Length: 292
Image (cartoon, rainbow, N blue to C red; front, side, top):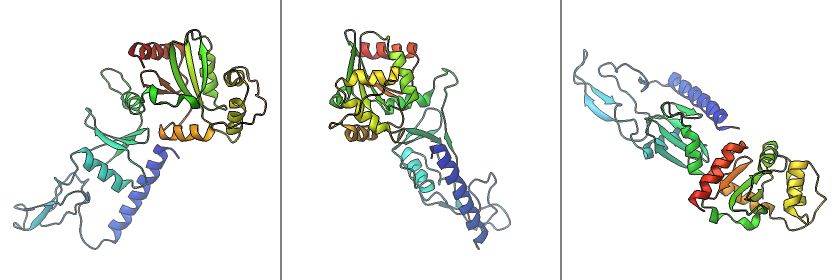
């Protein structure tokens, strides 16, 4: 289930539970979402669970002096409070971090997914956040920052190495042998000069992905066998060896690789998807200039 589907189902469940609780409650309460103020002397229940509500004395209405509970201090005002409130509303989502954005929103990180909300977690939004002035995809940029890793930290001994030309530029790619987008990317990589490719065969898409990963890794020339299969559709012979499939799967999980292809460049940047050639060359040139 996607984050969007899970949130939709969770929101419906929360709304239903809230409606049932409101219908059965004997005491009066005023929703904190209401735009109006409570009547004089009426008690408002703090639903945030984060801070005690501040009491004040009402001077309005026919019953001056009655105690009224203010909700103005109930809304969280920092990332920690937002994280606590989000967990309260969506306890099944494993929140990695919460950050304030310069757009007046809070960014909630769930794995590699980003969700946006307000300070009181009164609403949530899942989808790309676009800077209207610069036209930048802020969500994608943040995901690339979150997913970055020093290239030297990658266990390249678990990858199949393929060198074109002098191999001066490098890229590591997590690929599934049944991934159509991976095959499209491989076609693009065919004529990229002076490139070293480290392929982490990441069998997550189909039941036979693991079998193909084993056969390719155990071939006499794994790099050629991979290209033969991905580019030319040539099935590798059945192989038998100690292929590091489980180690690669564990690595991908640690790096939160959710789909294939996922590319890691020399400067630590990370991109998901089959990049068109021009965009791929931009990343390769930029990462080579920064060094890695």
